Image 1: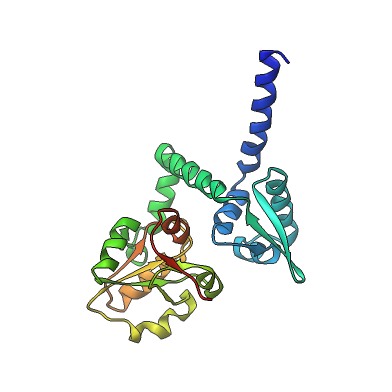
Image 2 (image 1 turned 120 degrees about the horizontal axis):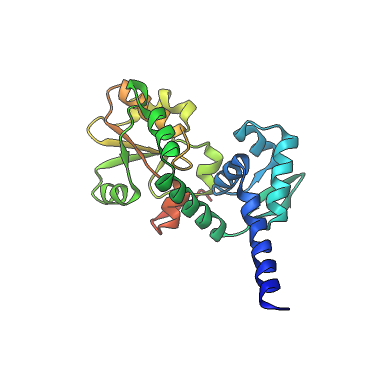
Length: 222
């Protein structure tokens, strides 16, 4: 094999992976699978796709060796093929937000206005607040995801349960909500509800997978 043929072949193979990622639905699927395994039915429900479309996108990711498949009883569950898949997604996301002003503007515009006036804190700041016991942290993802893994000492309060839980929260401390990641809107909606009811609230800018990636304390329900 000569040098030109070698380069053509290796770049062609790597381009297959990039092509598999070059779809907004598949990027959202990877973002979702960072929480853990999901069935195609769950993925379809969370992403707003039909089961058939979700299955097609998952097959593309599987062919690119970005996701793996395992059977659990009557269900087939999909998972990321490794932590490096999530690491790559984070770097790609950061690159896009750094160099694509329109993407950053979409996020900013979404959070603008009274109902979306969301204060953000990063994982490092949250870790310090928790160490000093200056914040209460709420995991507003579905309970199933909390059970798989969550920030140490976080309370499971799914968004639909938050209104009924408000009276249990102290108003003297900062309430920090987090969810799946920076594009997950559960935390934005939780902060809006908390502020409307007189609580000092913020959302963690990242999500649980990023917290875990940084090596901060996590727990799970056994």
